[in-house]
Image 1: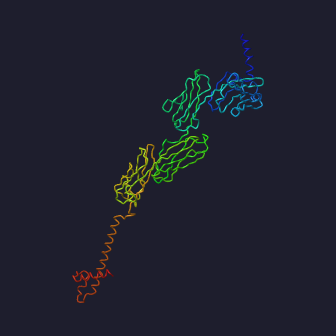
Image 2 (image 1 turned 45 degrees about the vertical axis):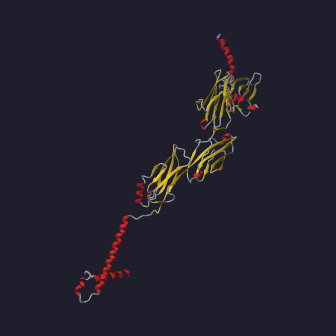
Image 3 (image 1 turned 180 degrees about the horizontal axis):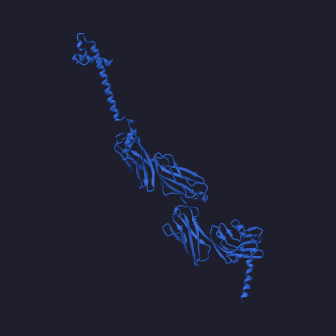
Length: 505
């Protein structure tokens, strides 16, 4: 009995092994492959690499494969999808010609899998491959199921426009439950997300809703089908209502940057339309870019308080128009004394911002001063400790001095850091370029006093010599003391007259 069983086993199995062992997906039972519409699908069909005395080149020279698709009903005949003869000639059905293929290199290794790229919803059904080697024919059957993720309205999905996402499959059993996941996390029902008959509604899509969306379908026969869709939302980069801070008199750049390149959605030409209402007049600008750019900034060469306010950037995308509002806030410094300031004056500098958001903080800083010599520089460096940095919008200088001359900067800070800054140059009228030290003035005064005293003594000596020359001969005894004798009143008056004459000369 055992011998008969062994003979029967060898009788039915030897023909299969002579052509090569057919793995599951070839001669085995029917397989099922699920693919999302728009993606690629591979229907497997393998031949085991058992040569049985022949090389794979010899095997491929006499091997052909024919892929057929069975109709949706039992009354429809199977039709050819792709046929590869042993000579290498290929025949493809016209509706699927550009989308189906088998790899030539894979055929030599026993891989007869069919690739469909991209998959369409009507491709669902039962496929059969017939692999022929000489007179041996083996077959494999694969059922292709299609999962469809539909967006309404279709792509591109624009930020803030309502979106409906639905998930369906070609499975014939009754649908029991539909679950949605965003970036691997279940999506809870909220004001912005709610489920309706298996479809997911997003009332106001935002940039944070971009990413991987996964739908999971559970049917009455406990079959679970899932699909993943990469959702791209076309919007603007950055915060929803950006504020740009610019100093009065400086240039400003207002951002308007899309989240994706327009070419990714088949849009070739894009232009942004900027508009601003100022003083009852509407100003507009047009900024055009090519397909490789997604930024449409508005550049203003010099801004003032009159330029502050709301600017609107409108970008048309197909039949829709995307809008982003940008606020320009101008930072200014208003001094209590316009123009140059007199030394010793009381000066108040007021730093202000148009269109305050409520979270701004101000800080004053003395960037540079103009001391005239080393001693004044040391004094300024010592005295600036009180004024070098000060918080608050107002900077109060009770008495302006030389140490306060220079550039003062008012910086505006917010929760995200420094937002902008403006500078003010402080000048003093009648400011001395240089001042000699006190000790130098004392030396000059002393020198002048000594010089005048020396000239006076010289004059007195000269007068004394002239007086000596006019003395009579009867007074020889007085010759030795003329220079030191005390003159009388008349002599003093004559000496003063002569001194005046000498001085005039």
